[in-house]
Length: 219
Image 1 (tube, rainbow, N blue to C red):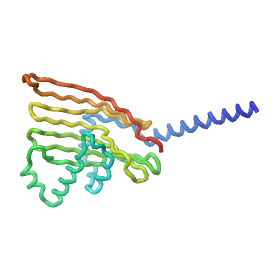
Image 2 (cartoon, one colour):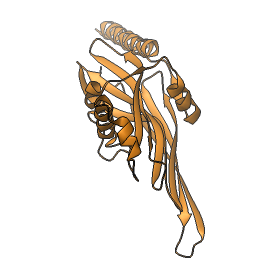
Image 3 (tube, one colour):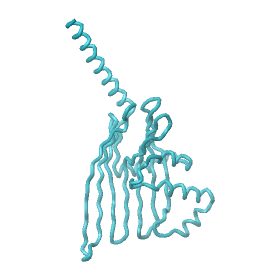
């Protein structure tokens, strides 16, 4: 009996190691490592071969984007501008731009990654800017939307930069982001803000945040 038990244990260990190797191999095959910083994002949106995303797909892609996200509401801005453009009113819209209004927002598709028959990732993003007056904002963001059986279950701002200013105050966000081969999203965010205090003395605050999470979950 002791020999049988040892034999079964050894088979169990071999099987477990085999499963781990299969999972590791699977992840490496379907998840190419992707690194993006500010320059990488600029190159991403400068690629003229990327396809624009239609308005009909935006709400589905941004479903489950947190209300507390830096980019909450940008989908509504995109849809409004798209509607104006389709109605032929964009030139008139530009002639009446005012403080805080979006000047333009573009949505593009970058890459699809199939993790299994049921699970896939879509990498896509927004390029946006507002009217050139205070307050002014502009930026670019690459999202990862995760689909399970065709349903969007997550929408994560993966890599981005965002600038905002209302003289003499300003704030900016930058990220160094990695989608690892083993299915983790690692984001290092750099935030800086500054302006003048009550004594008209210039100040600058700088913060760095790290975030790491699995995008694969249970396949």
